[in-house]
Image (tube, rainbow, N blue to C red; front, top):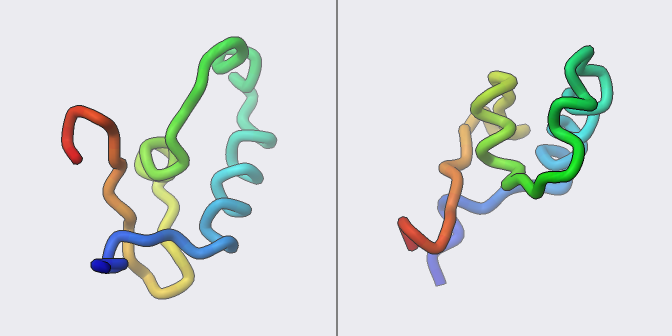
Length: 60
């Protein structure tokens, strides 16, 4: 199993913190999101410095 694009629990925490402190938080209300896509939007990297690629049904 290839885990080269995996995310650490800390990465998810960083994404949640960024969304929580976003002044436009309510603009995201009512939708579902992929953490890696939000990470790209907010410029967040994982603890190892990698930037996980967002995965979706279209690109798996």
